[in-house]
Length: 247
Image (cartoon, rainbow, N blue to C red; front, side):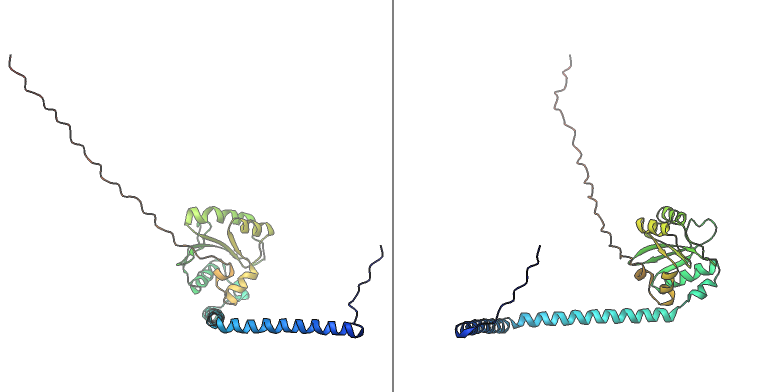
């Protein structure tokens, strides 16, 4: 099928077509001028609303800038307070790695303690945050680059809530995770911190809850139980009987 050739408007020819084109252009210019005038008049009538919108936009931009600046300053302060490199973490032993994770949680605003020992039920560090709840960290330090597999995720999922009352479960390693372990953890709310994320946490000063995008917990509403009203005691019915007459 032959492709149709696109036709462009041809130039006006003759005096009549030029006059028609001029009248059309003048009409369009008049309409545009009227629209602009109406816009200016509307803006003049509603200038308080427009000024309020402009002020709200400027205030919103200023608030975002202040928050971003404050977050950058807090991150710099955390980085200055406790900064660990991956090479330094690799040089730690298992217990030192657990204490380092505890100190990082404290740096990020948690109250935390190291609890790792034999029979710890997949909890090496336990922390609490006023807005985020209770967290359990399982530390897997490696010096040979071994991958953390799915069985570790199963164990942490099974003990974090029932055994430790945790709201958040995290497995941290200075090595990698298997693909299945990460997929299973993402599906069942077991967070993971591998070597790449670990570098962002201690070395770049990013807080753990920012790194994992942990949501703040909603305050639980207290349900008022209806108070039991005391049962009304019914008075025993009194029977008015005549005394028996002696025979």
